[in-house]
Image (cartoon, rainbow, N blue to C red; front, side, top):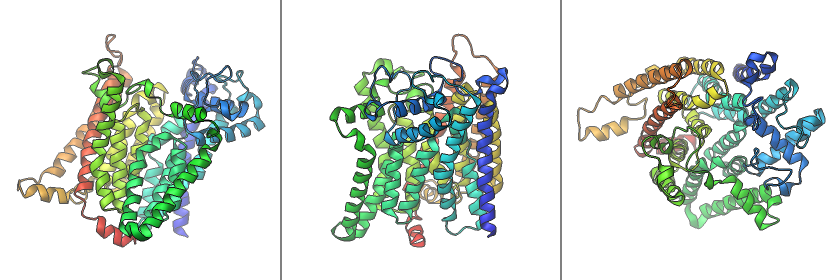
Length: 519
């Protein structure tokens, strides 16, 4: 009973933090000086991501389903045209029905563009909170309750830290999006396949992909883990039956989600073109991946043909995630699955085509899942991931919520896991690697100290860059100087983490033992 009370308190605290960030934007119209706290509010012609979500509700409820993804007089795709899979559109339609019942003006065709009112802001923020309550938060709580060999207090502390992760809170409640829906479905999928509810896990992950196509970042670990399970059971027996069941589950779920768009070939192709806009280029804005960072020194987009950029991006992404995927297929285990989710998502973020800064949330979710196993490195990564979105957060005037949520998250992790005491080779999961290296270099005993120093340098750099960005004006000839520096520093950190997580995967000696314990 005490466990239930404590977990409820954790959930309520997580909801309070989320709603507080929401109210920061909701109160925007209460004074002129803070009016623009709502991302894009009062700034035509696009009005920001908040308007994108409202506009999709306007389109889905006023136009027939065949026109949702097509350009037309009533649906200008240049003005926040739908570019997410069908489940996002259905979600927008559901919200639109509720909005129409409350106030039809909120989603009136054409006339509602850039609509702003305190009541509507409250409604939109409530839809994010409800989605969190129904999908993401229950998945986090159940995941932490299912953790093995740790005390109830540790499970509750783990849930608290995950729910306080600032990146997701700031993007969903400040910048305004519904990332918690797709991430929540993905987490339900992780739970399912980790505890041998493979069909339910596959269904949940299919829902995640059909809500946001960026969930493809997680698709290869799911595929390799389930395929490895089939191999382990034998493809001439139970493994083959499981493979057929999984295939039927995936095909059936996609057919159900896409059924209205399968009536005509052109309809299906148009939706796919909207989901994968390869014509937009290698990257957009200032994103902390390889291509954006490297373009500071060499303008890849101007030098190489478009198809070469696409092929180069594919090759780098595929090669960087291949070792971890092969290891997971040959030795499937829940632990290996979690770490491969991190590695593959990070590879996609760093090397794939048309990456957005918010896509780092897809890496942060699996890092949250290994927070208990490597608290020091996970906390560090989650801090860097939030910092990497600094230009976007400052653009949306979310500096104060960012500072408060980051400090709260760091304190929660530091006190719950004693992260500064978890820096030995064993605690960093680097003992097997270090032993291998010491066979050739006996003096290789300083790795933990190097990592501690790198953490200190990383944190100091992030703090200094944040202060410089907020207090100083960039040179006139280099207006994007601070944004570029944020991306550069974040990218260097992410490359280090990619190497680190791959070392854990390739030198992991616990997969077999953990699999026996979970079974």
